[in-house]
Image 1: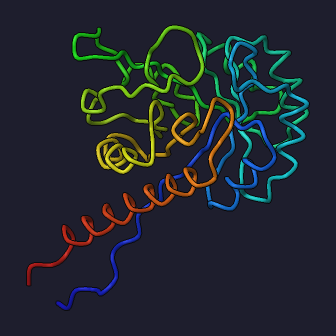
Image 2: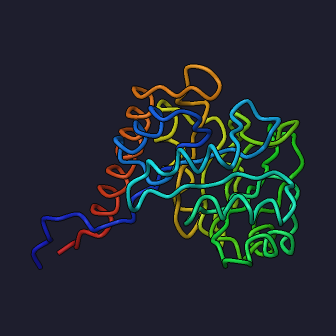
Length: 243
């Protein structure tokens, strides 16, 4: 049998750049080829924007680039009102919301939603049952993996990826302390553990809180694509026939 000259097609890693506050940063994300733009609707966050401001920035997005609205323990009515201002937004729950509360907030428009899981830091940290968590939040479009720190929102901290279970019946979004320097390794380690993998970055592409660097955004996207290429090559070699 003659082996094919093309590597098998693998799902590419989707990319979300979060904590956008400025028009020029939204434009840089779009130009980089990223898939989603995140707006933080959590007032204590230094990257907070109002729903009206998120709507204003989201209007710059072309088709097939998704706005994501991040909430922390917000009432369902507040979530619904914000989503009404940003049509087509994905909801990201990043607080202590129960499965029922997430479903209630998303239900009026049957909006897709993500649920953040706060993974403990350090080898001595208590175990986190991600398999059960994913089962509890089975209606979520994906489980977003972030480091558990004091407070809510983006942590900017990296948890130990090797402690994640080997198989989780959910789409996963890797977050927490990602940078252009470490995201390739993160993808290689975490991609096999879920149904698919996306990545989410905020502080790793900033010059200061809420102010993004176009150069770092492009470096981050390039590093993600390098990971995809490595995975495709590895899969190609594994599937080559022996005769």
